[in-house]
Image (cartoon, rainbow, N blue to C red):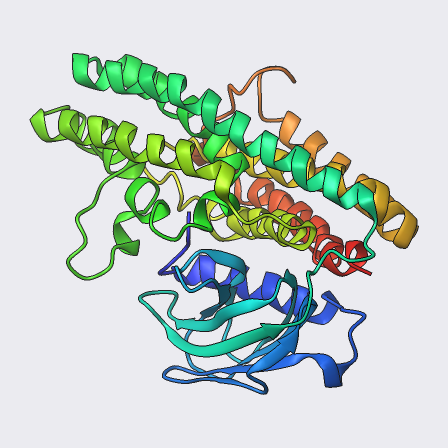
Length: 378
C-alpha cells in the first residue's frame, strides 16, 4: 500500500533508503537528455514539455519540506511509472519507457491528493523498436503472473470474508494474511490504476479528507484491536470482494514495460522499508513478515523474468542481485516454520537487533535493484 504519513521511525528508514538509491540509481542517458523535475511543497517544475518516444529519464530533486511522490501518468490517471517517498533535500533518477502520446508528470507533496502536474508530450514512433525480443516475453510472462496472482487471491479472500460474515473471529484472523499475498506480490500493478489501492489497502492514517475507511486494514483493526465483528464489518467484507474483483478484471489491461517491471520491483522493496520493517503495515495483526515475503517474492519474479537481458547488459549487477535476493530469502526463512509455509513469527516478537538485520538486508538488495531498470533498457 502507498505509505502516506510516516512516523519518525519510518521517516528515518525512508530517508536512509532514498539517500542510498539517490546515490546509486544511474541511467545511461546523458544529463542533457533527461527531464529535470524539481518538486517542492506547492510546485512541480519540469525542464521540458516534449520528449521522443522510448526511454525517458527523470532527474528528480525534492526541494520541499515534505516527502514527495513523482509519477508519469496517462491522461486517465493510470500510472506509467512512479517513485514514492522521495525525502526532502534528496534526489532520485527514474527510468521509464513511453510511447507516443499525451502524458502528465505529477508531484504529490506529502504523497496525498491530486498533486501538482505538468503536461508532457511524447513524439515519434513506438518505444520498443530495436529492443531485445526477450523483453517482450518478459512483459508477457509478467502480465500472466499478475493475472494469476489476482485470480488466486479471490478464493482466499472468499475464505476470509466468509469467516468475517460468520462472525468467526479466530477463523477470520487465520485467513487474513493469506488473503493478501497475491496483492502484495503484484502491488505496483494494482497501484498503477490509482483508484483501487485506496479502497482495499489504505491504513487509517493514510486516508484523504472525507474518505471512508474500507478494505483489509479496516477489518484488521476490527479483528485484532476491537476484537469484534459487527454489521458494518460484514458489509465492508462484501465491499472488499467487490473492489478486488474490479482489480482482477482490470489487471490484464495494466500498462507493463520492462522498465515498469524493474521499477516495480524496487517499489516493492520500498514498501518493505516503509511499512513492513517498521511494523506499521500490519500494526494490529503483526503479520508483517507475510507481507514482507510477498513483496520480496514479487520483486524477485520481476527480476527473474528480466534476468536474461540484465545478465547480458550488466553481468556484475545480475550477480549482485542474485546474491542479495538469496541473502534476504535466507534471513526471512529464519522466521517461519518451514520454507514451504507462510506461518511466520508475529512481527512484534522480533528484537530491535533482528529488525535492524532485516532492514540492512533490504537496503543491501535495494541498492543494486535501483539499477535494474537502466540495465534492461540499454
